[in-house]
Amino acid sequence: MIERTPEGFSALREECGVCGVFGRRDAAHLVYLGLTSLQHRGQESAGIVSFNGKMNRYAGMGLVFDVFKKDHFGMLKGRSAVGHVRYSTHGSSVLKNAQPLLVTTPYGQVAVGHNGNLTNAELIKKQLESSGAIFQTTTDSEVILHLIARSKEKTLPEAIVAALKKVEGAYSLLFASDRGPAGSKDGSMIAVRDPHGFRPLVLGRLGGAWAVASETCAFDLIGAKTVREIEPGEMVVIDNPRTVRSLRLPWTKDARRAFCVFEFVYFSRPDSKIFGRSVYEVRREMGRQLAREAPAFGAHSVIAVPDSSVVAAIGYAEAASIPFDVGFIRSHYVGRTFIEPSKPMRDFRARVKYNPIKENLRGKNVVLIDDSIVRGTTSKKLIRMLKAAGVRDIHMRISSPPIIGSCFYGIDTPTRSELIAANNSVEEIRRFLGVKSLKYLSVDGMVKAAAGKDSRFCTSCFTGKYLTKIHGGEKGPKC
Ligand code: AMP
Image (cartoon, rainbow, N blue to C red; front, side, top):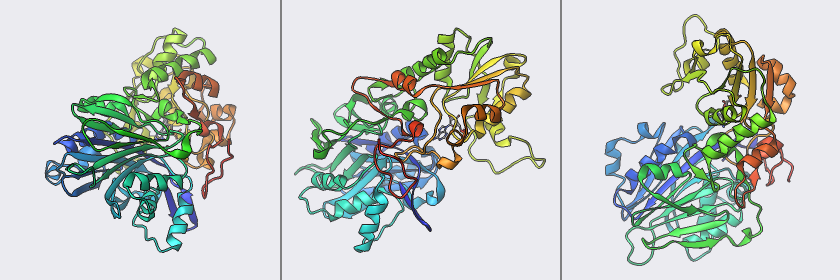
């Protein structure tokens, strides 16, 4: 996502999930359920486009369950549907940016949902605007649609290939089109993954129908079986119940794989399988590896920052032979609250979300596991809460390396200036947090824990080295 600001263009951090079903009567319902499983990938807007001889679209701001009501499915009829959940920072949190986008092109009506960020979209956008293009949204995904509309190819898949040849960065894309093979009433669905494979994208089978999703947890809910991952640089055209057509983006043969390792660290759900590995297994191994690299002596228990760190904490506890215990209860029902106590309460917002179990903590030395420290503000508050609950020593262990660079490929990280580890040493962070010891997992240890067959990772947020040129945002060196 590239957002134009008054000063020019800057990379906009965005997180998303996509889900689609082709060839089943209740396609939009299934996509809706799939999107609820992908809600962790984006909580700001949700949308579905279905096809029943014409394209139908409904999108809204908020969580999937809040956006879609029973009545909406009356207008989302059809045997194919694609959906999207989105979260973005800055001022682009507006309905016009909700996806899937739906436009009319020389190839018919085309809808697209995009997970990932393009790193040269602002350059292309400027060029397109100077030749008269009018953009309706501030999303980089719209750049792809403009490029498709302007291409001189014969078919939509060819036009998509021509468009993608011009863009750089991360894209797991899911298209729906009102055109399909002669005699087909379902149009077609096209899934594409960028040559590096930054973001996950999986293909599934649902009886005689097809499904595509960002993560396999969406398939579990709708009863789809995972067929395989869509390969980096692969386009899958789905337009009939029997088989799919697979095409390779021609320029991608030698592209280096760069699976986002942060998907394993934090972003994906532990019940998903992505990049050839179970997220749960990888996260637990990260915890084990952390225990080997950074033991904590004399601790009574290992506690986690729920929910994202629980699996790594289980791994740490197992390898360190220290009992795992529950230190915090996290409320799952809080959104953003505007009601604050009249007498200002320190750490109020964190306390709304987390509450320590004092009986488990009083007088104890604990290992506190978190999957990552971004700005350091959450950790600081949680640590104050632990101390108030009577904890003696806190050994903080982080199941990923220090985050020193922003992500330009689809994870919402703040600018470098706000990243605590980009501007402070580990010892300075330890002092800021007020813990007895602070240690992070090494880059090598993380990659070793995540490694699968043929996997290579994007570790740019941990190394500051980017695989593609970052235009218009903070510059990152090429690696
Ligand atoms: P911070 O207070 O900024 O250091 O936030 C750290 C916490 O945010 C950790 O508990 C992480 O689990 C969580 N976290 C890491 N990355 C993200 C992200 N992209 N979006 C939301 N939360 C995150």
